[in-house]
Length: 311
Image (cartoon, rainbow, N blue to C red; front, side):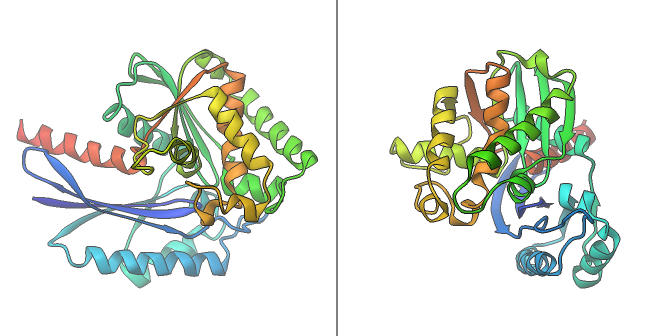
């Protein structure tokens, strides 16, 4: 039995999944942990990870280590995405992590991050054609799926934290700020030459902001398990009306919205602008949400390796 530990250090949160995999490749998830660390907070034009954000991240990694140290021979795969990828002080930060926890992070490219998203989605959802959208804290990954195959992929430098900090008020979002943010996002999308190939296709939403969109709507519709968003579907009308609702509230009001974590209330508008604009741009009428993404992609890659070795 293998104890696979996957740690995903993102721009807004750090997550850990522990899975048991037997010799035949059968698996079960035994632990899932998440901490909001806002690693990309206030990186600024110099693209420097800030001391407070680093301290929050190190504290979270210490909690994770206390958990996986109890396992027999844990196999650890640790990946870092946009915030660390973009950081000018990346090497110093990684050395600090290595010295403190003997943990080596693989700083993966946006394309690699997107491929893991794709693997996680196609292994867990019956998607034939669609556009996968993973909105993170500092980047978003777009993957065009055609006949269940990955046709095009791109990582773009916009996310819930970076958009919010660059354009939007943390309290009541003003009209001119919203217009500036939407114009920027539209311009980024216009630079993706293949994006129009996704016209009329369903969208598959990943990432904390998109999953929060599902949770808000599940709570509104009185679903018993609000967190179970995997495979949940929403119409474009529901997406637009939810964003409109949030834009009408100040920060205190957003913190009271059922299904919306207080830790995400200041960045949720920035986090939902990309998916809302994409659905409008592509005239997509439906979004399906996935709880499976990067960490699941790493898991299924490992399972495929185990199965191949058995053969």
